[in-house]
Image (cartoon, rainbow, N blue to C red; front, side):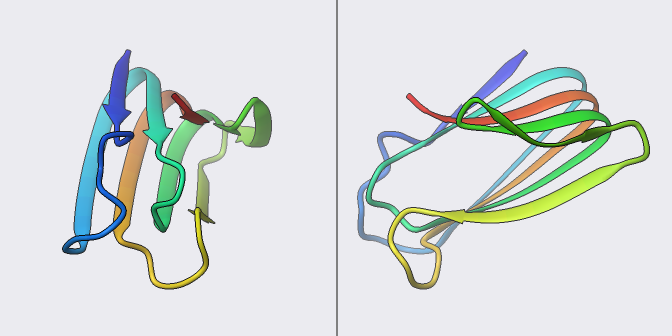
Length: 92
């Protein structure tokens, strides 16, 4: 299990790209309120869960890109990749 905790990011500042990969298991991405963020999640076998709701599941490879926070260009981009398991997005 791994956690990418972005809750302490300030609402302004330079563009940030965060990359996270685990082979097998549960990758949790904690997103802040008020920061434009884009998540690109890839799962080979497993599912992607967004705020308690499964937005995709299966065993043939999944890929989803979603934006969170205020409208506009993202300040933070997260590339989350899990070979087998789950990418979970939630507020902390």
